[in-house]
Image (tube, rainbow, N blue to C red; front, side, top):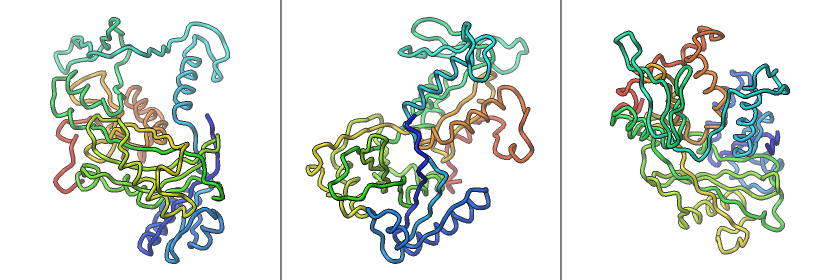
Length: 349
């Protein structure tokens, strides 16, 4: 998984942002997460590659870690196959036929409905694919990332879903560390990056302009990984050279040893992907109103892997009932996803 428990460092470049770090530290401490506040001098002593203004600062969380998202995804799939075997223990060491199947390269074309026999809401009983019908035992969870909204709009005949989850293009740069620059020992990001998850609704994520914030870390192979960009670019997942240049320029403001000119980095490669943004500002997790046996888990934007375990627990609760959920947990569990609640209110709430 390329799991590396190196900790994370959130950095501020102004006095106002440093105040935000103090408030964030209080929030983390209240949640039981130990966080260490530092002034700019302490940050630069800890990470010599960084430069911060005198009124800046940092917030370190030593227990944070990073891993390779793609490798983690396939590891989880392999684990599901092992745990799905008849009579398998928690380690999945016994043999047998697995009840979990990984089906790749097959399009999911539409939902299969059956009469629930109660004259009420329609009931989802499976998914029709290009290779035939896959029957569902309990129902179907739609977790199709940026494609979730459009797919549900077609499957349910409800246009309100079309813009509920939309693509948001992002660029990530990979390059050899510049000669003479001290290696980063932690994942670093500027405080503005975290604000993307605090500003909900139309006041933030629906903005059309390209937003670039500084993030940097070192891969397990020793490469320098730089980000991050966010832009509403429809379904275009091609690299935008102007965005690549802006990411480098932003990073060079914090890493003075980095040349902001892309031509100075012959090893530079750019990864481009589409993040699934929920237009209401919060991920869509829960059952679909008036459609039995259908749940949604989408719109996590750049935090799908981080929030994956909690999302899975919420979906498990919806599918199996309230076993294991206490009253405090229930505050965060939507009873159903109504189409009237898929988009932000005029106030952005």
